[in-house]
Every structure is written in C-alpha cells, then in structure tokens.
Length: 280
Image 1 (cartoon, rainbow, N blue to C red):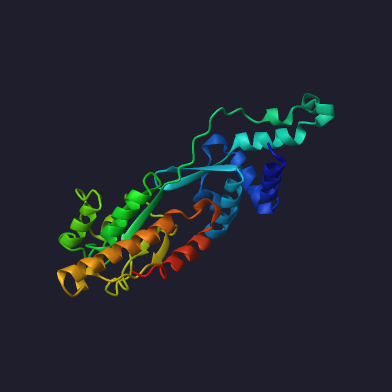
Image 2 (cartoon, one colour):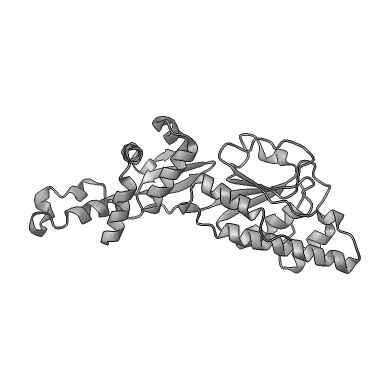
C-alpha cells in the first residue's frame, strides 16, 4: 500500500460518525447492512449517511452491492487489512509478528463481491410516446451494464409515435419491445426501486407524480413535444433529429457523472444543471 492511499483511508475515518459507522458494519461482517438500517441505527438523515458512505467507499474502506431494491454496505476487510498491515509493517524492527500481527486478526478474504454499479432510471412524460421513449432507448445503449432504464407517462398513448420509432430504428436501436405505459407500473412494493426519475416535459398535465420512493433523485429536463412540431415533413424530421441529439448529449453527460464521488445533493444539482444545457 502506498502512503497516499493509507493517508486517504485515515482521513476518511477522521470523523466520529464514520468511526461509529465502521464499527457498526464490522459487527455485521461480510453480510453487511442495508443503507436504511444503517440510517436508523445511527440516527442519521439519508442524505448525511449517503455523504459518509460515499467518502468511505471512495477510499476503499467499504463495498456496496445491490440486492433487489436495497443497497447493502459492508466493510472491505481486504482494504482494512492492508491499512493495518501498512501501519505495522515496520513494527519491532520489521518483525510485525512481535506486535501480535494486528492485521492478521482480521479474516482473510481472497475475493470480495464486486460492487454493483447499476442504477435504475425512469423517464416520464405525459403520453410516453416520444421524448421519454427516446431517452429510454438512448440511455439503454449509452449506459449498457450500468443503468436499467424505463419510461412511462401519466396518460400513456396507445403506442409510441411512428416517427419516433422510425428514427430510433434508423439509428440502430432495438424497438421490438418499445411501448407506451402508465407510471402506475412503477409504484407499489413489487416495482423496481428507482434511483433517478427524470421528467422530460414542462408539466405532466398538472398532475402530481406518484411516490417513487424517498431515495429517488428527481429532475426536470423540459423538451419540446414532437407531436406539436409543425412545418413540412423535412422540417419536422430536422426538429426530431435535434431533439434526439439534445437528449443524447445530456445523457452522455449524465452517464459519465462520478456517482461514487458525489453525495445525493451534488447529484441532484448536476441533474438540475443538465435541465438547462444543450437545448434541443
């Protein structure tokens, strides 16, 4: 271990709440604890806990895995073992065994489960027939393996707009399973837990969005409705191209955000900023 890495770990632990967090998770071993359970045990607001978890995970002290709708955190015993080994490697003239081999007290773990960096994203628009459908297709391709993506609407159309389907197909997107659907499919105990919910129209016909869970980061990226494009067929096609391009640029920025290094409020600010950039 390099001195800079050890210093980063120690700096991440130089706070009372984080020491309490580390001690709590060590007690739960490799099975770890869900973020919600940790918040209750330590009496912390979710946003505050997220900030501390991110800092400790970034320095290699914790690992996170997704289990269904929950994110489970556990101590990275390998990381902690390496830190203790670094601190004691010169003990007693380079004979750490004489110090009781402190690092050896920790369990030996040859391989830890890899962190699951997959986020659930839901795009909303009233009819779920154009903008949200395009966003779903674009992020599915851009973020393959890192994002699971859906779209829905408050008053879904019978089917997506044909011009949108044709556009997506022409650009190589698979449209076989694309459909317009109600946001009701994404509420309730059996629905996937959303990490991000992004509305792509100015308003959802004045309706209040359902409860997608208290952990979802929400944002609004108002974009023009292709159903209201006017002009010749060529002009409408050009506007649709611009809409696709604007969405793609936004989503490329979104997909490249350093989520592990940002707390909930920082991610929210980035998403709000994206609502005002790259105007289509």
